[in-house]
Image (tube, rainbow, N blue to C red; front, side, top):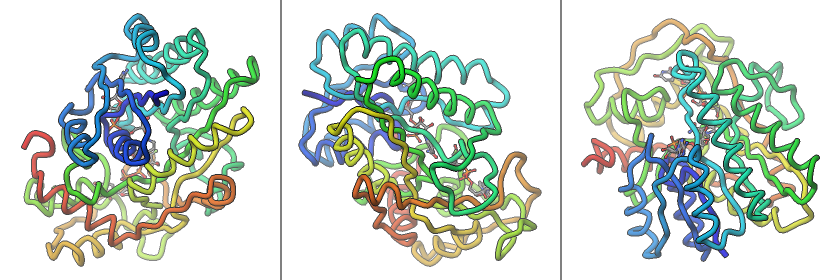
Length: 337
Ligand code: NAD
Ligand code: UFG
């Protein structure tokens, strides 16, 4: 029996594929490569020395999905596929609602048809909006502030409703905090198609000389140094959380929700300093105005995942910076090198 990994060629998906293969799972990847490269999957094979099956297909293509489910013996699904750029979601809401929500509906319809009702879903800390306090627990109020976040909330609700309609559906929703870093081999990592939106790939591209300086979005937040604070988590720790979620699916069917974060917050300037220390490079930066929609502080209370999944992040901020740097240094142009 195999695990179907949607979006498995992407950043988090490819790292999860490595850990799944290392743990002995058989995997089938479905990805339309809209934000990824098939080279990532070649590297996954190289790192693990194991085989995986890949279908280049779009989740919106019901017939293609149906054929995959007919052909393969699929046991459970890990659902990463989706568009994730917050700014783009504001300018192209229809594209985001269509791809993320209709894609998930199509996937669930095909799963239902084939009697596959176990799913792990990639949600995000963005569903907490601007939390009143930190650390953030899973039972905090939910409030997305942009179309991307709203697709995450709609899909969380859709999955909960599915379980209410048929309690054989077995669902684990994982709310990721800020995934960064790369596999320690330096062979796979985050490969943004254009100028990076997120902090760590921006820093690594400044370090490698592709970008001139980092714009720090605001130094007047109510935080120790005035810059935004986030809960950065090593992508390998995050990947390992999915293996624990698969084990959870073997228990009585239900809907379980977990924060995957470290529980520690770092500011933008602390990230710059840590990166400079491990890379030996200087990161030029300039203070810019706040980025609309950003919040001051966001970090998780990850204790539920520790208690119920036996999962905990173990890789520290230096390891995150070290691995991100190795990936960028070895692949200055990402998978195009
Ligand atoms: P990514 O863009 O690297 O990976 C997503 C993959 O899905 C890509 O390979 C893309 O080609 C594929 N895809 C998109 N739409 C598709 C469709 N209709 N059919 C088939 N494939 C499709 O992103 P990622 O960082 O690996 O994120 C994975 C998941 O985790 C996403 O759902 C994202 O919203 C969520 N998430 C990411 C972050 C983050 O900071 N990276 C944080 C929280 C949640
Ligand atoms: N930042 C800068 N300059 C940059 C990029 C980011 O100063 O060039 C700052 C931001 O203002 C913020 C921090 O760095 O304070 C982190 O920003 P990111 O863009 O890396 O991450 P976000 O916390 O804004 O959002 C990310 C994903 C969301 C996801 C969220 C929680 O982009 O999709 O983490 O998981 F919802």
